[in-house]
Image 1: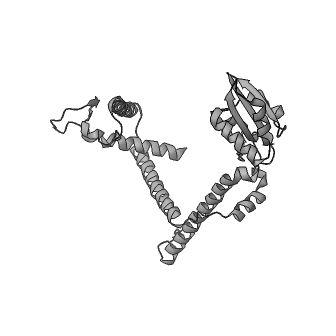
Image 2: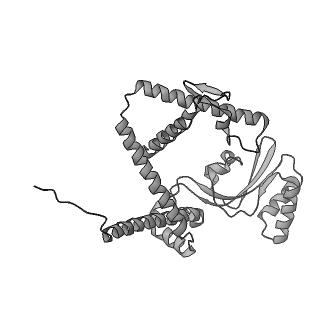
Image 3: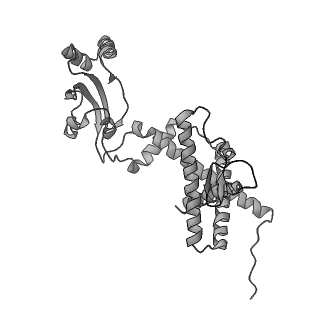
Length: 288
């Protein structure tokens, strides 16, 4: 949080100072806006509007930029007027943030150059086995097949039979039917989804969590002149063990983060040891 405040302060200060040059300068150019004793010119807006933005959208971007510029300067003036400025403290903060920025940039370049981003399936499996305690579900997840249809869809009973059939020819026939009549469907998705994410596109509240264990049966739900055919293929409840297939990408990110930390820690040790070897570091005993 403190680093964020440093960043915001540093950005705001830099923003204000960058426009201090907007003071008249004895320039004949007509200013676009003024905030106290500072002026904004057309040249200061170069690059603000993307090349593909025109008309009213372009004008809106410029207007918002000018308004934000005036707000920033107004806030700065108010702060300067009402706060007793400790220049030394501010300078220390700026120096501290500058050092943090430089070090952060160095670490990012080091990571970009040396981090091995290839995570083997074996590593993912081992991580999952060794850290099962962190993979407890916070909310239910489901595997689901569904077809969204008009309320008066033709051949509904045939569609239901096709949905539960394991015959490849029936699956092909069902897909052709869906492409013709359904605005949205998913027949062979083997991915896990949070139930509340599915609720954004399906009437999960009408299905009810008490039915989440009723697998491989068809639920027919009508809502807003639309018919939904749902089949739960699998389900996991809150506080149960999250499946590996659901956590794979998360585990990969965790492994890469561990590598980043290890790489940075190794770099710190090597830099410190190198400085010691080159006699760049000394500790003086205080004279008594």
